Length: 159
Image 1 (spheres, rainbow, N blue to C red):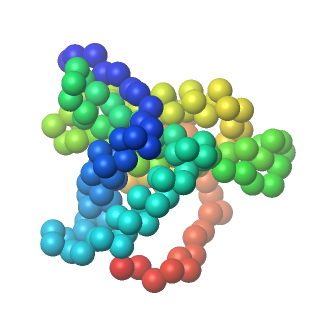
Image 2: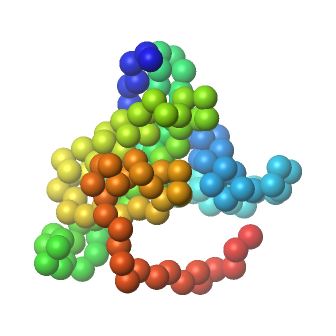
């Protein structure tokens, strides 16, 4: 396998980042081909336009040579300080994605470790994530733990 490099993405690459984000959403949420996702795309574009320059989100691409093969992101957040996170600084790991032809080559792991390193350098005390069944083993191997007693409530209508 060729060497994988991870690099941070800036708002200057918004169009490419949006292409990748919509690819991830289409696969993860199995959005049927031809579905109008223009409102969702605009909402994501607005998010990146604010969060990337504000330092509230770190996005990255995984590349082999000149070819982009994966992406990832981490949303930086604050929560109330607690015994397991005294600073209250936390992050939400998301959008970890590797194109099918490049899977099972540890590229996802490389992306996650790069983003965790950025979070650690910023003093983040806790990282959350949601995972698919396909990604669960990778996260467990990286010492992410199941969170019992967690529930979620969708307050917005699903599209």
